[in-house]
Image 1 (spheres, rainbow, N blue to C red):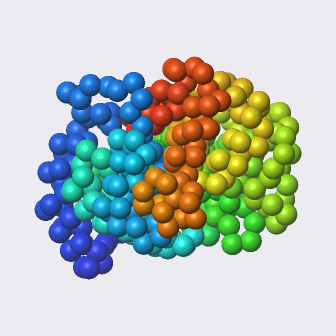
Image 2 (cartoon, helix red, strand yellow):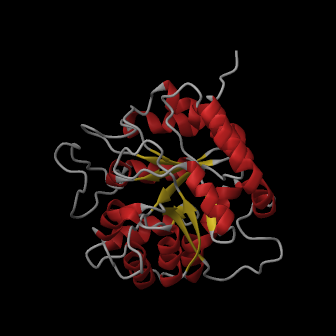
Amino acid sequence: MPLLFSPHRRAVLKLLASGVVAAAADACANTSVLCADEPAKPRSLIDCHLHINHFDRSIEDTIRHMDATGTAKAFVLPLETGEGGVLLRSETVLHAFHRYPDRIIPFCQTDIRQPDALERIKAYHLLGCRGIGEQKEHLPLNDKRVEAVIALCDELNWPITIHFQDGPGGFNQGLAEHLETYLKRYQRVRIIGHAQTFWANISAEVPPAEKSLYPTGPVKPGGLLDKLLADYPNLYCDMSAGSGFNALSRDEEFTIGFLQRHPRQMLFGSDCPCRDGAGENFKGTCYSTQLQKYLQRIIDDEDLLTNIFHSNAERALAGEA
């Protein structure tokens, strides 16, 4: 028997459909993030990881952040459970997309522990969402409900951004043991890796999560990320937040080679909560500005920078490995 929405949820989605589907049809008919008649820009920045209400930021503040950081478009990721400190509904993201269809690339997320989760995701697909994320619940990675969501993304030819964090109170625990299984089993879905445990595996030496989720010092070659990226073109790296910047800045020489080895699988992202691109309301730090400056300093290959700053995001959306 098919799973059904509650009357409240059905009403919400019906309301959304009345105002959003028309805009979604125009903006999403083309699988490319760029409109057919929009000329490609050599460095049109796409941020693969933003939340609207991070630190109580409004949609207007989010657009202000994008303007200040030179961000043309952003994957806007809801977090419907509120786990991890941010509560953002998929409906809110879709309303924001309806207001700013040329700036926001809407993703959806719902509590996958609920019985109607897959039906809700399918409804969000019809309403114009372009992927799932941020997938972040207190579940082991090999939980059947996690696999069901990944399998649905494979069916829909979607990307999914997953927060990997081992240890007590973590999310999608067990990357080292289980991620390759999904990459091998589901080859259309683009799995976008994010957060502490994902980036700790840039090195062959990974401390226990209970000891440190932000390892520092030289990277030991031969890490799991290098292997998985080489073997599975459907794996992408989300550079955002402190976890991404810490991993990429801890051993600059290693990072240059790492980016050169996997030029088509690196996604610029910020996960930044500031309002102005200069760290307002975030202790003077802007993750977007910080990462842009770092990448532009260490990379002298314009093609690689173009891939990182926007082309790879387009490939991740369109399903082109």
